Image 1: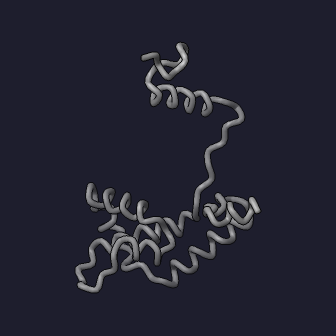
Image 2: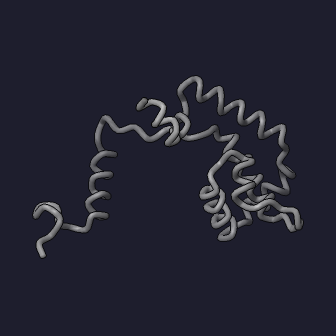
Length: 137
């Protein structure tokens, strides 16, 4: 059976995509992507995820529920959990110095994120399938 790729691009597709990304980053027009949220909010979410991870209460919510309450994806929560399980010493140090995260701090950080979003310093919200359907008419 003949190859699905053109003769000049028959190398591994992953290698080709890495080469294209390297080429794009070397371009003078390249700019790194904007963050999704403010640094303060990201740090507080990390602290709340660590608090959730170390909680031993029987009424601890599920990961998806906790992520929904924090306003993040459950996949990011899982990524943070994997990161903490590999090396949690930094988070324990932060826990000792800062104490438990407070909801008031998270609300203030979400306000920073909202202000940065209005100034165009952050990425916009994800578009849902329903939003796309509304735009298409």
